[in-house]
Length: 171
Image 1 (cartoon, rainbow, N blue to C red):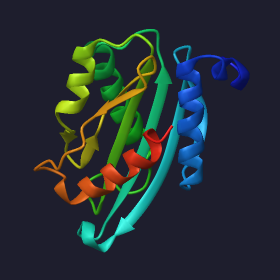
Image 2 (cartoon, helix red, strand yellow):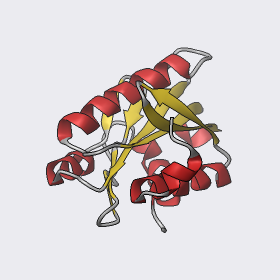
Image 3 (cartoon, helix red, strand yellow):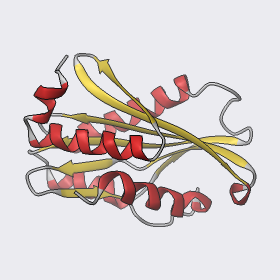
Image 4 (cartoon, helix red, strand yellow):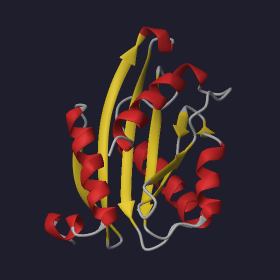
């Protein structure tokens, strides 16, 4: 696994360090994991709000630097992050006054524009689980993700937009 110093030497690595600092500053627990030889940053927090129909949302941010981002790569990573979040959330099953939100984030200096469009077009929703994939083109310093208010999960939209602005922008 790469050391922190090695991760800092590349633009994608510097961006992941930035995200980790923003997650930590917002009270998320963070750690690095090895996913099949790829260092992955995992950030996590949970919040309960009455205006969310008295539900608790478990928010996962899972980020990795990869050689290239394509639609199949971000799509597969999004599915992997959702499975990971469901498997590690703990507590009551999703849907019983709690849900999962996730930001699956890939960063690279080689990004297919179709992958950016895919991330920006919509929030992905499965029963009580919402993901907003994030594609970061470190060569252009561009962050592509959905920023709208979807029909399903609309009550959480402003929360997702607020956290996205805090975690992924402002470099």
